[in-house]
Image (cartoon, rainbow, N blue to C red; front, side):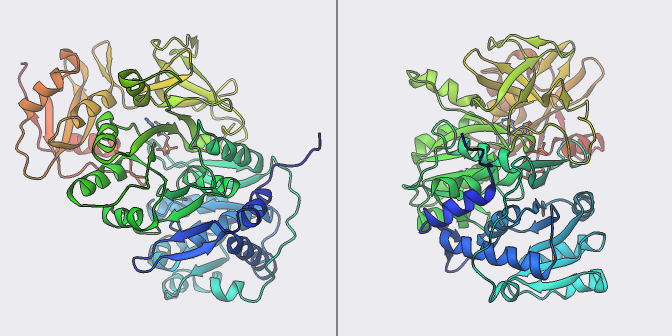
Length: 545
Ligand code: ADP
C-alpha cells in the first residue's frame, strides 16, 4: 500500500472541494454570517501565506487562538496545522495568569484574537514572554493590547493581513506523527497540562467521530457545535465536519439558552454537542417557551455525567434524544459513546443509555485495582479506568517521561472510577478525587446527584465529601431549587431514600443559588469543598431519620 501520511491538509482539501458548498454559520446576535467550506479553504490558504510570509512563522512554531467558536477560528484550525505549524487553542475562561502560564509553556509566537475578547487578552498578554504578533479578528480597538505589551508585540488586522494573498497554498507533506495542535487540560484537579495531538491522531479520531457508533456525522447533517473550540478541540467536530461534509453552526459568544434556542429554530441543526449544564439551562428555557426544535434529533452530552432525568426530560417532552458520551482532553477527547446494542429495547435500552458508553476499536480500556492490578471486565468489579490507543496521549507536553501519576505501563490513568462490562460499556461512579469515603465504604457523589436531580423541584445538585469525625467523610448535598420551590432538606432526603441505600443519605444540606462551575462548565467541587471549609455555606444538619 502507499504510505500516504494522514495529515490535516488532506482533511482541508477534501472538505473545501468535495464538500465545498457545505457551510459554517456564525451567530452574531443579528443576521448570522455564512461561509462556505470552499471559502474556508481559500481563507486558510491566505492565512497560511500571511503567517509564513508576513509574520515569519516557520517549522513547528505555535500559533495560538483566543477565540469563540466562529468561522475565523475554523480557518485557523485548518491553516495552522496544514502549513506544518502547531495550533494552540487557549482557554479564554481560565484566569489571566493561567492563560499566560500556558502560552509561555507552549512558547506561543502568535495569538489570533476575536476583537470582543481584546479586553480579556489584555489582562494576560503582558506576561506572555514569547508572543511577537497578535492578529485581531473584527473591528475592536486594539489599544489595550498595545498598552499591555509596549512595542514587544505587533498588532495586525485579520482582514488586512489576508487581503490580496493567494487563495491556494502548497501544503507541505508533514510527518503524520508531528504535532498538529496543542490543548491544555482545564485544570479541574490541578495545574493545566498540555496535550499535543498529532496529524495522525486527529485524522483517526475524526474518522471515529463520524462513525455511526460515534456521533454519526454525514453530509446531510448540520452540527451545532456548542462545546468550545478551546476545550478539547470542540470534541473534534470541526475536523469531523470537513471529513464528512456536515455543516457547522457556531454560537460565537452567544452561549445562553435564549440565543441557543433561537439558533436551533433558525438554523435547524440535526445534531448538537455540549456539557450537561448547557442542556440543563436549555431545558428550562424550552419548557417555558414555544421553540421549534423539530430538526434536532440527537444531542451529545459529555464532559461530566449526564443525569438520567435530563435524558428523559428531553426525550419525553421535546422528542430530542440525549446520547451520553465520555472522554477527556488526553483522549482527543473521544472515549466512549452510549448507544444501546442491537436488540436492547425499553428499560434495558435506557439502562445502556445511562452508562458512559461503549469504547470503539481505537480505545482499549481496562479497570485496575488499588495496586494497579487489572480487574475483570465483568460489569461489577469497581476500579480506576485506564485506556490506551492511537488518539490517547502518551505523556504531557514538555515532560521527558510519562508522569507516573497519570501513566502506567503504556496506559493512561483516567482518574475515573467505575466498571467495564464484557461488551465494552463503561459505567463511571465518580472521579477518584470525588468519591466519598465513608467508614470503609465508598459513596458515589454522582449517583446521589443524579438521584437528587430527578426531583422535580431540583434544578442542579452537587454532592461533595466533607470531613466527619465518626466516618472520616460524609456527603454534603448542595442543591439549586426551581424558582418558588419550597421543598425542605427532610423531604429531599426522603425522596433520595427511594433510590439510594440508607447509609448513603446525606445529613448535611445546603440550598445554594448556583453550583460553581469550572472554565468548561463542570461542577467545581474544589470550590464547594472550600466554601464549606470556610463556613461560607448555610448548612442544615439533619438528625438520623
Ligand atoms: P478536566 O480534567 O480539566 O476537567 P477534561 O474535559 O479533559 O478536563 O475532563 C475529563 C474528565 O471529565 C474525565 O476524566 C471525567 O472525569 C469527566 N467526564 C467527561 N465525560 C464524562 C461523562 N460522560 N461522565 C462522567 N464524567 C465525565
